Image 1: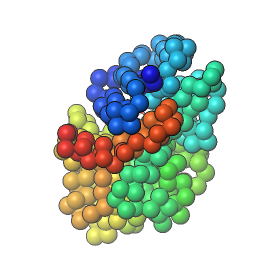
Image 2: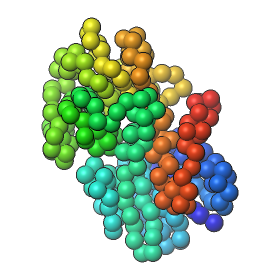
Image 3: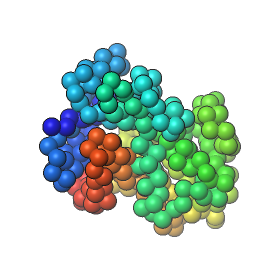
Image 4: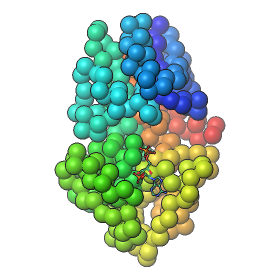
Length: 268
Ligand code: ATR
């Protein structure tokens, strides 16, 4: 019996149990995947408890991704550079940290036929989700980062080394440079948040990704559609594909994530 889960705070809305429990059934492995709510002060003790109880590992979500990296005994290069881990695997007495959000984002580019080594990619936002996106795009010829709080963009960019930081107020001008890819990692446009204010000029970006997902297209993606950007996606592929390396780490089976993505599109 393989036991795994996702740990976060709050955790109520997570689709991860739906995804992983179906994969256990698909591959015929007896397993159980649960959502675990742990406040920051309880995070470390809860992780050690699961490891001691023989769990295979945990996915980690807001607000614990940096703490997950800290407590690990081994870290992948991606997790180390991003400064966050969303995947912990328990092996013997080791806790191995990885960042499968990177793979999730790479696969979401793949879904819309966009290279992860574009000529110019522009990333909006330097919060929790931006690091994995920047790491996935690290071989872009040019990578530009804009965040309302510029210092935060500079701090994140310094982890990578080849990123141009521009002022938040310059975003219309940067987008008018017609990058190959524009990614929104800010929380703007999420339920209860103001929309992202952005104007596309005559030369729109060639592709647009919003890492948020929902039943309806996000305001950012509606704007991209109006600008005629055909290569666009929300964050659902990233969510589904980040789960696949986790499942593989714990079961040695790579799941049919593409099918799950199609099913979730219907269910949402
Ligand atoms: P946190 O800030 O707690 O890390 P997050 O969801 O990981 O939360 O990140 C939110 C992102 O949306 C950040 O890039 C944030 O910009 P700041 O770093 O300046 O806070 C961005 N964001 C949130 N509200 C915004 C707004 N009204 N205008 C512009 N950017 C905003």
